[in-house]
Image 1 (cartoon, rainbow, N blue to C red):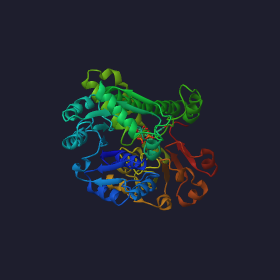
Image 2: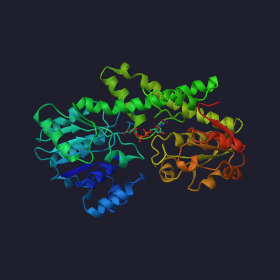
Image 3: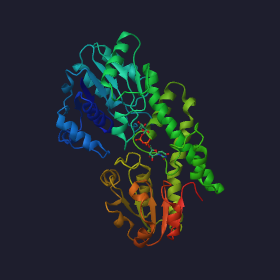
Length: 435
Ligand code: UDX
């Protein structure tokens, strides 16, 4: 099939490339010339495991074209909208200007019978509003939320755990669902649960899923706060409750909390939208979820001060990790980078390192000192803070690291280190949610 993908960020670039790898002819449209240039040369504009290889393979097949001009979508039968919906600068709500612009840029090039597929995370009701413009030219708008995780984007796109379509009632909706079935034919959809629903449910599924995940993380981080004052161990508590299959152990890792381009802004946009709909009370608890999450960042800074003896001013602190999670170079709302900035603001001499995110972190927080070399970051440090649980950091040898630092004091912001190994190498070990 001939497919267009509008917006080539994390979601769109991986989606476009994955669809081409399935044998579709794909045109990607992107307004950022740097992204167009990189992708046209077969280079990934961000770090995502497995993406470079897929892109190289797809480029060789000639099935992926990239363009800056929206008219390149003409002749495609299916058009995916994959642009971002960041938080507005002036409120908690989602900024819909990119979605609105993407649909407006598509409409003049649509033919009757075309299917426009929204994948961006939007406030409920957006699809119904956009559908009017799309239907005016005889095309159909459906909503098909995407659940990919950064760091696993390729695998999640090609092997989803469910497929959800929101379609309008009637024959046009049924036909659009059949067209999407063709796009996601075997092997992608083989054995994958498929839920076909209405537009508002499909929009809500995505924010409900992300709100649940954020709530799960903040729940365990609230328990971490209790463990800290009561003398418990949140990692053992998570193991113990996680054995109950109704609860499950995944997403119960206590620590610095959630960040990234999705969870924080999605729960805020959900609260804003629920307020607009007169149902703010229904999701008021998400303010607490956000509050617990932010308290973890403050607590990490307090703990870092304790580790260096009370006052951070002038103390040399090694920050290991800047990305919001391992296997990503994304620093959007990164808890690690936020804590590094707070430490520096308190006067600490912070050196930040990360296997992939030094460039993106430097662009966002240029006031900090960075190095690509973990040894250089550790050299002479009076405290070592592990804030993103990259495998490289989990596997550090405490004895070797001990020879580089000025004091053997470590703060495990992600409960990712082998505590016994660090303590037996003479380290003072502190962590969130453990006494
Ligand atoms: C999330 C959703 O998981 C995905 O389905 C959706 O499509 C987009 O948003 P992503 O933002 O890539 O994906 O990352 P995710 O793996 O969900 O992690 C989000 C944050 O939560 C990270 O900062 C991570 O460190 C943190 N986290 C995750 C925890 O603090 N504890 C956990 O147990 C799990």
